[in-house]
Image 1 (spheres, rainbow, N blue to C red):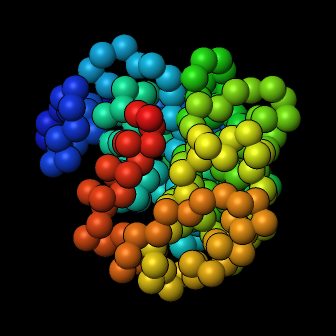
Image 2 (image 1 turned 45 degrees about the vertical axis):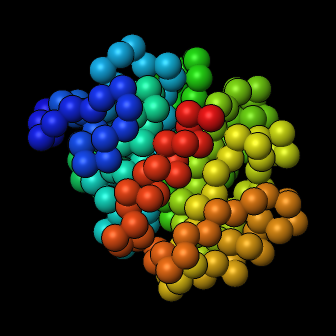
Length: 225
């Protein structure tokens, strides 16, 4: 169990950490154990947000600052926030599988931590790519999604799945104007045929250095809307 420096209030205090404590445990995944971190709001959770991290081979973990920012926004919006390590990262077993096995990891976490009830899927970079395919699969199975959040989705490096049109109004796509890891043009090329809006952060890079409070507020507003 990891202890944070302070709790959260009913109204966002952007300097606060996610929660008084973060729960850490392992759950069964398709390629062995998966490491999971859970943060809860002070009041009973109104749903669950499952959050996927960046590329496993390039330092992506559940402790990534953007991923933690997404978790903070979810908790402040009254949701249980579930971060997890893809296979081969941290204490998660298995090896990198170019997104195929990682999709299975995400689906296993959803099944274990949010088998029913309001569900939010969020992902950063490679995690956004995986989330796009999870959204497609869950929608085809009839699972309702309350919200979808894609931050810096890796459209230039992976084949993002198009999102179902009926989920467009519930989807937030955020990208940095000056992202030199995933060019904004690649995300626009993915979004344009879908007529899916993209929120562009002026001067923002891939990791939103110096702009994480803004990112947190954008996501919080979307989750609360």
